[in-house]
Structures are given as C-alpha cells and as structure tokens.
Amino acid sequence: RAKERGGNRIECFTTTLNEVSLERQELESCLREALQNDELQMYYQPQFFMDGRLAGAEALLRWNHPLLGTVPPMKFIPLAEESRLILPIGEWALREACGQMAKWQAISPTPLLLAVNVSVLQFANGDWDACVAKALADTGLDPKCLELELTESMVMRQDHEDLVPLHRLREIGTRIAIDDFGTGYSSLSYLQRLPITTLKLDQSFTAALQSEDPQTSSENIVRAVIQLAHSLHLTVVAEGVETEGQRDMLELLGCDCLQGFLLGRPLPADAFEALLEFMSTKQFLKKGGRAPEE
Ligand code: C2E
Ligand code: MG
Ligand code: MG
Ligand code: MG
Image (tube, rainbow, N blue to C red; front, side, top):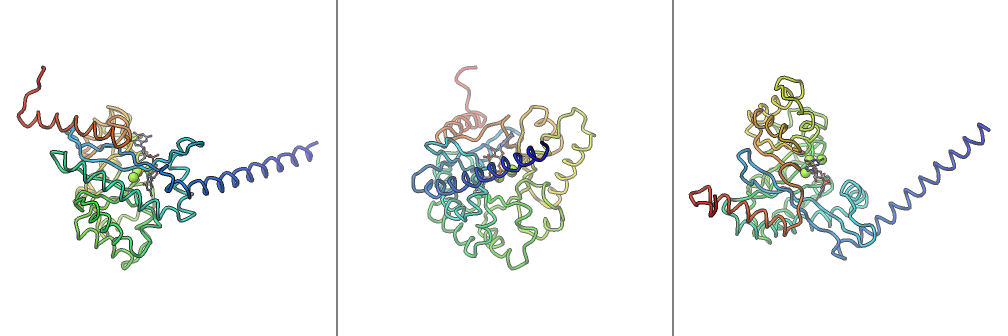
C-alpha cells in the first residue's frame, strides 16, 4: 500500500509540473501579444518628502489580460525576462512613463522625480544608455527628473567597462537608485564605486520597524544604513511604509523620502494626475495663499 501511495504521489507531482509548464507557455504567448493588444499599463505610486511634499512617483507595470484578469508583475516579469520580451516591454514602459511625466512636469509647481525599474537584460544590452537618452529626448523629459532603479545583484558583478553606460547617464543628470537595498549580497564597497544617487531601503526593513523603541536591532540597522548613505551623499527612500509608527520612526532615523500604502497605492495615470492637482493646490496654499474655507 505504501508503494501504491508513493506511486500516486509521483504521478500527482508530475501532473502538477506539466500543468505549471503548460500555464507558463500559455502565459508567454499571451505576454507576446500583450504589447500589441494594448494590455500593458503603467501605474504610478507617489513618493513623498518627510514634510509631506510630493517628491515624485515610481512607475510600475500592470498587465490586464481580457481573460486572465490582472497578472501581477511578480508573475510576468520573470517570464518576460526568460523570453527576453522584457526588452520591448521595458522600452515601452520607459517611454510611456517618461511621456506621462513630461506632461505632469508642465502642471506641477515643483519638479517631480520619475522612478523606473530596469531589468538586468536591459542593463546588459549594449545600447541601453542610448535607448534611455533617446526616450528622454523624444518625450522632452528633463534627464534630472528620471531615476533608474537597478538592483544590487545587477551592479555588483559588473566590471568597470560594463558600468560605462551608467556613468554616461549620470553625466547627463539621470539619477540612479539601488532598489530593494539590503537584500542582496552586500559588499558595500560598490556604493563608493558606482555613480549612484539613491538607496531604496527594502520593505522588509520598513516592516521590521514596529516597536516604539528606537534602540531595537532593526532600528539600529536602518539608522546605520541611513547614516552610511548620507555620508556618501545618497538619498534614502523607504519602501513599503504601511503604518504611522513606521513613518514616525523613519522620520526619527533621518530618512529622506517615503513610499508605501500608508501614503498612497500605485495609481493609474488619471488618478495620479488628480493627486498631483490636489497636492499642487495644497502647495500653492502653503506658499501664501489662503484656504477658501477654514
Ligand atoms: P519594486 O520595484 O521593489 O516595487 C515596489 C513594489 O512594492 C510594488 O509592487 C509596489 O506595489 C509594492 N508596494 C508599494 N508600497 C507597498 C506597501 O506599503 N506594502 C507592500 N506590501 N507593498 C508595497 P508591484 O507593483 O507588484 O511590483 C513588483 C516588482 O515588479 C517591483 O518591485 C519590480 O521589481 C517589478 N516591476 C514592476 N514594474 C516593473 C517594470 O516596469 N520593469 C521591471 N523591470 N520591473 C518591474
Ligand atoms: Mg522599484
Ligand atoms: Mg523595491
Ligand atoms: Mg521589491
């Protein structure tokens, strides 16, 4: 009986694997058509300075499939990378977001930053920096308003000459962020070597900031990271801020910018624009205007 059960289990396991690979293949062919069929959309999650001013937005890809519904990035980005579809998709995402932000700069009283995620395949592609520069030129977005998000693992292993595109982009004013900072291998020496401007503290660190006591070990780690970043003249953005307690602690620890569900979820372009208009009015009022009703 034991043998029988074991046999069944293996069979079940095999069936599951086949189903998974079938689903992946189907997903991949759907993804291949997603761009043409206009199923991809950019969402924008607001980022704020500690004093509450709007700092900018991170552009995040969404895939709305007519039958599958909303496919989360965690599911389709790895697939897009394996199939190299991330190259056309990533380029579309960059151009779409830059075009959108160029329009928003025109109605915003202060310059806003647009953060765009970059895949390792885009980064490794020879003409990557030219591609970014062209997207900026074509959309009219000021290079200083673009922040490219790379991960630690992408930049850590690169030789000096592989980093030339990064230096070129930095030279035209584009900002470079390390996303999910603290989750990769941390040989911290690369922070000095690379032309980066920003550390995005991974949301696992933010999540660990639960206590009221500024002396617990997670608070100490975050404080040390912020001090290190500031000593290298880097800006620190905390990701995944969900509670008032986390926000207060991050303020106490000297963090520069916040991003998270507490302050705002990723929004479609029209909803982000409404937020922008609302924030602009508030900022105008702060500059000396008076609230109509108080
Ligand atoms: P990421 O770049 O680290 O983006 C932050 C993720 O955290 C987003 O998930 C965002 O919706 C989520 N998030 C923001 N605030 C909170 C919060 O308070 N709590 C929690 N639990 N989550 C929060 P999303 O949009 O599902 O994206 C997941 C990942 O997919 C991104 O992580 C990024 O690595 C990748 N991705 C998204 N868009 C693109 C893109 O255009 N290109 C590339 N290459 N990757 C992308
Ligand atoms: Mg990111
Ligand atoms: Mg991140
Ligand atoms: Mg992440």
